[in-house]
Structures are given as C-alpha cells and as structure tokens.
Image 1 (cartoon, one colour):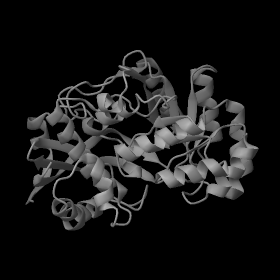
Image 2 (cartoon, helix red, strand yellow):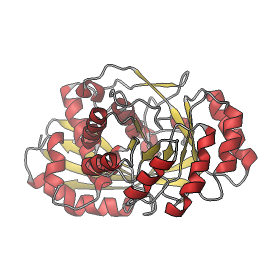
Image 3 (cartoon, rainbow, N blue to C red):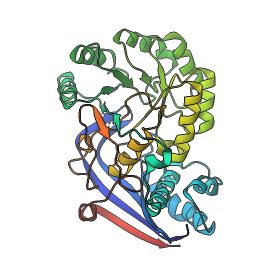
Image 4 (cartoon, one colour):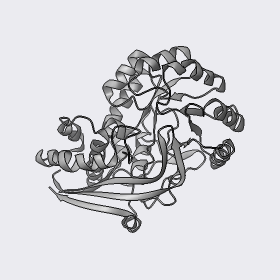
Length: 369
C-alpha cells in the first residue's frame, strides 16, 4: 500500500480508580492514536507510551515527535509498504519500539480491513475466547486492597495479579491468598522495584503458591533474575527485560525467564510479538499477554494475539470498565465467566465510537505523505 496521510490524535481519558505501581500512580491517560490513510483504506493504531518515562524510556510526547520527524518520513519515502515491511524500514532508528509499534499497528489494521479479514485469521488461530486476568495496583490501606480484589473475584476473573514494592509485598500477598483461597491463580508484579540484595526476601513469597513473580529486578539484570530463579520455587517471569527477540532468547538461555510476558508495544509491534511467541513456544517457555492500560484499540489486538497456542496463562486483557468508564470503541471488551470473547470485526477487531472519540480529543495534527 502507499501512504496518503497521517493523523496524530491525542486523547484524554480518566481512570475509574487510581492505578498505582512501584513507578508511580496514574489518574489520567494522555494517549496518542495513530490514524493512517492509504490508497487501499485506513487503519488505527495506539501508542502505549505513558506520559512520563518511568515504566520505560519512552513517553508520549517523545513518541509523537519521533513519529512525525523521523518514522513517518522514512515510511513515506519507502514507497509501497506492507505491515510486514515496517520494522525493516524503521530499523535505522534506534529504540522507540512503542512509537514504531503504533505505526505498524495502524498499517496492519488498514491492510487487514482492505482484505476483509481479521487479525486472528492472519495469525491462523481459531480460539474464540481467552482467559482474562486482572491487575490490581498498590493501595495505602489493606482493607481497600481486599475490597477491590473481592470485587474482581465476584466479577469472575480467572487470575489476580498484585503489584508489589518494598514494604508492600508479604502481608498484602498473604491476605489476598487467604481471601481468594488456594485454588485461584495469584501472581505478583514488582516492575523492577527490587535488587539483588532482596533475593532472600523475595524467596519468602514461595509459601503463597504464586503462579509467578514478574520482573522483580531492574530491566538489565538478567543475571540477577537467573540467580533468583535458581533459589526460588516461584517461577520468574520477565516483562521490562523483554524488548526484542534477541533479549528473549538470551534471557531464556541464561535461565532468567521461566515465563515471558509479551507486550507488543514494548517489543516494537504485534508481528515482533508473534516472533517472540514462536521462540518461546519452541523453547517450552509459557507466555502471556501483558496490558498497558490500552483503549479498545489495543485491547482488541491483544485479545487476538493471545489466541496463539503458546499463551498458556491468563493475560491482563481485562474488561474495558476495569480502567475506563467509557471506551472509545463501540463494542468494548467484557469478561464473562473469566473469559474474553475475541473480537471478530475486520482489521484488528474494533470499530470506533467517533462521537465520543471527538469529545475527548485534545489535539489533532494531519500530515500529508
């Protein structure tokens, strides 16, 4: 396809409850949407970068800038481009996987819509539902934590994930395990909040029969994660460390990743995410799909990705209402009996609620090819 126009649209969405992790608290989302018009139709993508560079080095203003000044000019100069070509065309630009992923996503959406097919059909999968887990943030009060967890249990989620940090780990995990019982899957996510001197402390989580401990140590500390994996009976899962196919392979070889959380935006797009899935499947490493507080655009694409056979654990593809009072798509993701129905609309699986989208748009910039 050949490109005709790029629209960079910023929207603002309030979260229904504050979402606190070890790197900060989110109350409001400033989201960059990428809308590409081509000679065969148009498509939409979502950049998952946050407002500030705390989860990763990327942030939404930086993504906006690098797309308009570098990535988009490279794509338009390349001429006839398919979604599968995007990563190669943009490879000379170092880093910025979330910005690259947003562009690839919009182009993939346009390509699939033009062909009248869906993302999960492109992936060659036929699963119509996937298990849904929910991510629970850090609270100031244990009673508030338990009340929220109980609500998610009542909603039927298949797995609970607790955010942890130093000073908020053993006691919250113990109380939540007592609340949900021994049979419901429970895992924890530290978002790099600990270091190697905390390995003995982290091993104390073993008594709570956790599904996994996610990214306890800094992103670059593969050796430390391997040491923890040797000492702990709780499987070690990597998130922030997995930024490419190569880092995934290295982490597995070092014994640092017994489970992998695949976030398409973090690895440069959904096609790269599939390659990491295929690697993990071949190595016998379970994977699951992580969330980045996406709107219905990213949530639909994540659901399709999670139909691949290596996604053996419930991911963070929760109901849209977990984060937003109203989503920007006409048919938001919901959870029924612990599962999400995979969207089957052409493209990545969503249709936009244009009236609502316009009402929350904070800026729009159109760039012709």
